[in-house]
Amino acid sequence: MNITEKLKALIRYYEEVISLPHRREIAAELREEDDLFLLLLYSEMVGIPNPAYYYTLELYPYMLEKFHDWHLRMGMDKSPLSGIRCC
Image (cartoon, rainbow, N blue to C red; front, side):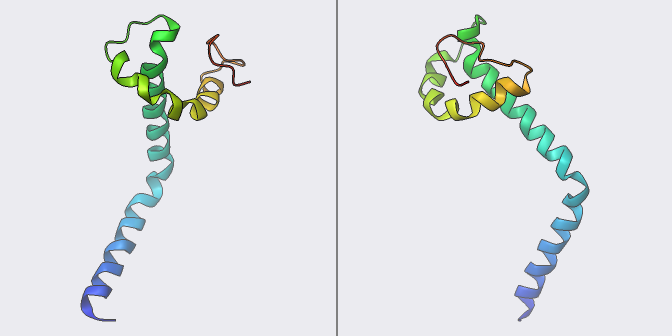
């Protein structure tokens, strides 16, 4: 191993040590961010005006897979939207 490879390995180790205690917090923040994005995406169907509806419309096919997990995490046993049947 030359000096650059050792330095890269040291940097990777340092990043692991720094991020280790915060992994759960980071995962929770990412989940909250995803939940907010899904709320924005499906807000028009729920009745909340969405100013970006035209731009988010093409994301629906990709986000349908995540919809089931989202509404269960939000405490809804069944899909709140009549147009989406996931359960």
